[in-house]
Structure formats: C-alpha cells, structure tokens
Image (cartoon, one colour):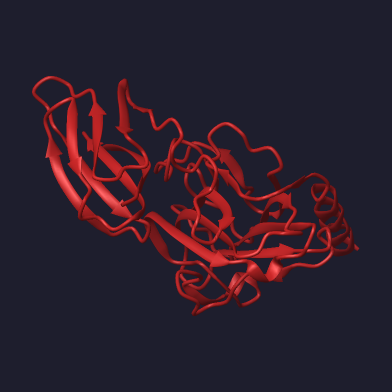
Length: 295
C-alpha cells in the first residue's frame, strides 16, 4: 500500500511540475533564479540548492546531493527541470557541468525525460555515447547506466536532443540513487544547465556581465567574446601573485601563467574558437568565469 501511495505521489508531482512552459534557448547557472526547478525525495537524502563545500563550476550555487558532504543510504531523489516547448526546436543540445564522488557502479545519477506531462519517463542517452554516461550500470538505480565514481573537478557534458523536436511538453529530471551502504564523503552537484541549438551559445551563458568577486577582490575579463586578446583585471594583494589558467570544456588545461599585476594581457590568437573557462587561483581558493573565443 505504501508503494502505491508513493507512486501516486510521484505521478502527481510530475504532472504538477509540468504546468508552465519555456521556449528554448534556456540557460541557468543557479545563482539567483531556480524558478521551475523542483526536488522530490522518495527516500534518503534530498536535492538542495545552495553553496557546496567544494565549490561550484561557476559562481557559488549549484543543485546537489551532499552539499555538506555525505548522502544517506537507500536514497532515491529526483530533481525536476522546468517544462520546455520543443514544438519548433530542431538541432537542440542539452548540456550541463557536474562534479561527483560516489561508489563506482553502486551510487550515482542518470537523466530522464518525459513528453507526456510526467506520466512516463525515458532514459536520456545511453552508456558508451561520447561525453555522456561513464558507467554502464548503477546497481542502486536498477542497473541502468549513469555517472558514478569520482570526478572532483568540473566537467562539461552534452547530448543532442534533436529527437525531441516537435513535442510541446518536454521535461527533464536528474535521478540520484544510492545503495544500502553510506558514503560519508559522497556528493553530486549540477551547474550551468543549458538547452541551446547546435553551434550556438545559450542566452546569458557568455557575453553577460562577467564581473564576479573572489573574496574582496574584483575579477573581470574583457572583451567577452574575445577575438585576438583579452584583459583580465584582478585586484592582487601587495607582493602576492595568483595563478591564471584557461581550461576547455573537457576540463583540459590549455594555458597557465602566474600573474603579478592588476591588469593582465592574454593573447588568445592561437586558441581555437569555442567556450572556455578562465580560472584565477590564490591561497587555495579559485574562481572561474566563462569566455567565448571567436576569430
């Protein structure tokens, strides 16, 4: 009887969340606005929106399990996206950034989608696809594929959702599951969720106000997008330095240098066009900002 009530509640929540619709492109870095995002936990830990113990991929906030860290045994928790109108949205791309630390093949996360107001859910993608799931099965998730193991630095993932074109009510959900053993240091976090057309950049993903704060020090990059060069402005403390790095969307470092001045010139002529992260690190802390390089 309890299982029936739980299933009824899940269907109710799914249908409830499938009310408002958003027409892509769509981008959310989860800094200030999480309208339309909803967390439902059947058992164990819950999805939380906030500041994680190990930092975000951009800004300070993420959606995550184990922000403190640690998650409960026997967790089944859902994070529901807003509902999107794909009626006329060909060549769509679903992307996001993530970090995690779970028991390999035991605890982890998969993504599902619904096109019928949450009545049925289908696995998004499959194991073995480029830049997608790293585990062919997760036992706590009914042996379905997903992400598990250890990823302690931000990594970008993307997948085509062109097959969903023509559907008026498209909704996604992150499904986190754990087995009977507790992972005291475990966590999973999601940041910079994006739905865009292939070959384009989501609204507000880059080209926005790229100023942020690193402690009490302002950090900005201009121009953004950049063609031949860019200038990084960072208020260094007297007689100190910081490490500047440029990282591509796979997490690979392609440039680094120590900076000793407030304004640092960066030559990007030899860097291939695309989306990158600029990271400034000092005293064990760091901040990342996105930059688009165009030629």
